[in-house]
Every structure is written in C-alpha cells, then in structure tokens.
Length: 448
Image (cartoon, rainbow, N blue to C red; front, side, top):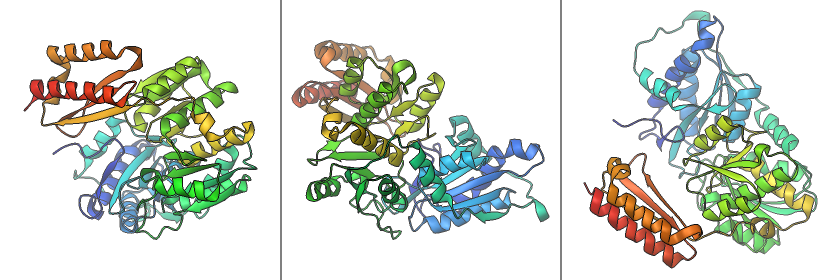
C-alpha cells in the first residue's frame, strides 16, 4: 500500500476512497499525534475544523468532529470557510491543530482531509507519517468529562474577512473587478471584502449549492472569467479554486495572467517598499523561465522549491523569505499568511493596480513567458534516472543547445512510474523538439 498522504493531505473520491470511517480514524490518529504534547501537560487540546461547500463535506465534517471529540479534543467548528481561513484561525484561536475538508480544485465528487499544525502551518512529512502509522492501533478512549466538547465559531468568516481587510495594502477605489468564486468557499467572503475596500465587484459563480463547486468555472476553467471581464469592461478579473487557496487572473482584454506573473507583480511591489527581505523570492522548479529572467533583471534572487505550496513554504521559512508561489496560483505572503491565500493575493495585486494606476496587463508584462512543453513518459523505472550516464549526457547537450534562452527539467513522479520531461525554449517548436528527443532517451534507457 502506498503512502496515504499526498502533497496536500489525503484526497480522493468521497465515499469511495475518502470515507466517513477513514475521516473518523484519521481524526483520532491526528488527535493522538498532534495533541500529544498538550495531553501530556494534563490540559485538553483544541482543534478547529472547516470545510468547503461540497455535499460530502456534511458527513465528512461530522466524522472528523466525532473522531476528535471521542479522542478528548475540544472542537471549534468553523463551517464553510476557505482553507487559508482555517490556517489563520488555527493560529489566532490558539488551537493545537486545524483540519480542512476540501479537494481544492478537484471535481465535486472528490474530497480531502488536510491538517495544520499549531500556528497554522502545514504538517511536515514526519508528522503525516506518524498520523498514518497510528491508524488502527490500540488506544485508550477518554470517558466522562475527559471527552471533547464541540462549539460552533459563528463569527469565523467575519474574523477572516477582517484579517484580509487589515492586510490589504491600500483601498481599491476606482477599480472594477470580476471575481469568479468557483461556487466554492470564496463565494462567502471575497466579494464582500473587495467591495468593502472600495472596488466595484462583479461576482460570478458565487452561489454554491454543494454540487456545483469548480464546475466549468474557477481557476481551472478561465473562459467564464475572460468573457465576464470583457463584457463588463472590468479592469481585471480573479478566479479562485474551490477552497480559495489559489488564484489566477485575467487582464482587461481577457488575457490570462498566471501564478508566475502574479508572483512577479507581488515581488516587485513588495521590494519597492522594502517588504522583501534579502530581495529574494521562492518559486518552484516548474516556474516559467520568464519569471526567473524577469526577477534577475530586477535584481531579485529566486530560490526554487519542489512543486507543492508546502515545499514553497518550507523554503520560505528556512531562508526567512517573505514571498513565494507557484505557477498554478498558490501564492504565499508570509507576513500575513502561513499558506497559499488566493483572496489575499488578489487583494494585494488589485491594490498595486489602484495605488499606481497601472493596468494589470502592464504589471504582468514584466514576465515574458517562454513556451513550455511537458511530456510525461510512462512505464519507466524512475529510480534509475539520476544514475543513467547516457540520459545525463543527453540533458547536458540539450542545455548547451538551448543556452540562456531555455531550460530542461526531468522530474520523477511522486506517485506513478513515470518521468516528466519539461523543456522551455524561445519557440514552441524548439521546446517540443528537444522535449521529444529527451523523452525518447528516457523511454530507451529506463523502460520497465
């Protein structure tokens, strides 16, 4: 059996692989692992629990809350909130850990369970492994007054909204923005916060019914956002995913603005006011070379983390860096958040537009995106890739051929027997040619 936890918690088909029984067992195990220090101090541990609007969130929330309370944990139930709200409230409520029920950008039928440690930080691999190891093991159940109590935190969304308003750098007066809330958790907070800061808001896909989350909308389906921005004459549009921990955008002409470009806008605006210590930012190995070149031209250093916002955050913490993000739109503003926060990132970008009077297209134009081609080579022994001399020679030749105008990256998949071959070049034809050449070498040398 493979590792239960993926790069962002436990995720799968709700009531298929992600069952009420699994949710209850994970909650009990998490209580034993994450609440152990508090329990040892003879005081009861506390957890916050939130979810996105998926229909399956009803029974999974009930299972998690039951598991935690049965293990002696007091629960603050947040209801439907964005993932970054759970992270924020884990810290401000001084909870020992937090639980979010969401499958992020996945289709409605999926759901997931992710945990936050004290302070609102995502768990280290070792803690996830410990939770998994405790599943199904014997434990002493508390009884009597030792069982946990459950309380609804009725003002959870208000607390998070107030936090967003306080973190926004400037008012948004004069801006018209379209917000695609993916019929997810952003629907309940993003339009109100933008409007309260002075923006004229056009909200689309902001009526969640438990079944329509991410359905043809949000950050994975940008066409509705593009069309709405153009039709309403908006200055910009922002599209969130189902749990609002990431965001992508469209400029006034309806052109896409990806996470790399948003990261560049944030980096330059923060650096301009001295809020980027060390003039450094964290991106990932899959970030477009255009971002790296733009940051270099601006005198900023870019550290590259593995793919996944948890790894971006780890590098930010290890090197005391205030900003990091991914091309997919996970953007972490470390002075205000401990995880990716799509609404906060969108507010900060919009504030830059409002304060400078600069259109989003011009701000995003600092990054000239190079064509990027990704080829997944399946049915190979990924463990031999690093030690194969012929493959290493092929990669070196490709890098020499591309020079400063291109880049090569080979990444073994974390969950499948395949290798991802990514090539960037000055033209798509050149990137495709080099990627296919390298993919051929991988197939020939590493076939199972």
